[in-house]
Image (cartoon, rainbow, N blue to C red; front, side):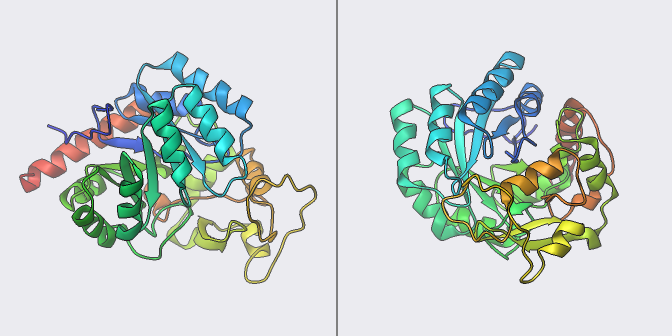
Length: 319
């Protein structure tokens, strides 16, 4: 018997949320496949236009009647527009990374849509709950992309669970059912996984991008300083060498995609380049334990494996 994750009216069969990875890594096709397999699917809205996001939401809804949401980076200049677009399209939830605002909870109440917040501490989790979050996704240092902490997820989860009443979802470095079981035992009601779903048939990132994940070793994972103003976890390549330390990459055309930007390099262009297949001069965000994942599988098979591993792990400990 699997633990049940309940967020507002959402009650997935498997307590897994697929992370909303920008830019166009987590598309409607991937989110729908996860939802159809019994989890919760998330479209990464950051880096899309409102029209593109609308298309992705409608694509997902045409493929499944399961739960579909949208993640938008709080630092994105189009944050409000993309959030409101998602709500008008009646997604099942929205979630914000790298910060959150009082406005998004107000919009959630107005549209009747649950709002989740990604946090990295008990203090922020408590603040999100007070503002009206339906749940918090707690990210540890092991996560891919932008990071809000240098502490491991196993240290943070018990602190958050002790402070809030809303569901607590663990994220960062979770690659299999044994990892999920460990988070459940620490008090989490579910998990968010992103890196594992890049290596799925339904992920629409370029084959070169997936190959880079498959070939990665522990030594290939690094931290960069993002123009967003946060560290980010990625895979080493020529691009990460160029931006190391005080290094910068000139921006050919600024789209003003961020509210505040250090202009060290263009985050949007570098992510687009990698997802399109340029794994030398693009930025490849990745979780810390990407090297543990050794095969590309259909989402349904991934979800089946995770559920079976989780059930076995919990049975062994009598949970």
